[in-house]
Image (cartoon, rainbow, N blue to C red; front, side):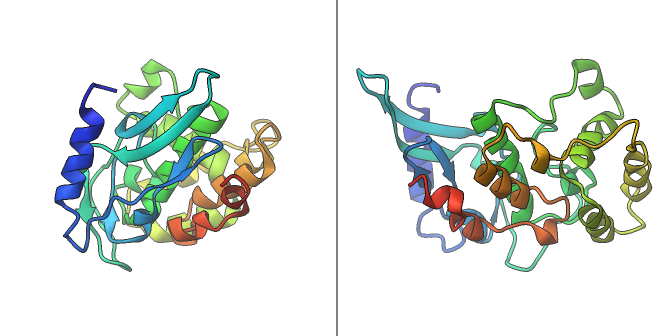
Length: 236
C-alpha cells in the first residue's frame, strides 16, 4: 500500500458520510483476516471490485499474528447509485479477471454483481486461486470473453443458473447465443469443474461462495444474507 493511501481514502469516505446513499461500513472477520461489506446491500454499486482496490490497515505482532484494524475500498470514482430493485445496463464494468458475467454481457447489473465479484476475490484470498486467470494471449485477445466466460460456465453455471442467466440477459443480447455455444462444449469428454465439488475448499466457505457466485444474479445471496452465513458466524 502506498504510504498515506489508506488515510486518504478513509478521509474521503468520511467527507461523504452525510450522504444517505453512500456508506463505507466494514465488517472484519478477525480470525481469518477476511471481510465483507454490509453497504453492498444498499444503493451503492461498486463496479470494480478486485484485490488491489481493497485497502487493509493491519499490524503484525512480534509473534507473527496479523490483526486487521480496518478495510476500505479505493477508486470511489467508479461507484454509482442504483436504487433497490433497479438495474444498471450497458457498461462493461471492472477488471476482466473479477467482473460478473452480466457485466461481460453488458446486461443489467446491480449489487448482486458486486457480490459475485467479491466471491471471486474471496476465492483468491482464501484458496490462493485466480479462477479466471487465463493465459496472456487469451486475456489480450479480441474474444477474451470466450476464454473467461467458459470458466464462468465451468465453475459456477448449473443448468438452472445458466437458464436463469440467459433469461436475465434476454435473447436480443449477442451473448445469449455465445453462452449457449460455450455451454455446449462441455460433456463426458470435457466435463465441467463445478466449484461446489472443489473438495480442497472448506465446506462452509464453499457453500457461501457458491451462493455468492450463482450465475443467475437474481438468485445470488445478498451481502446481508452472506453476513448471516455460518462461515462468518463461526469465525467471528
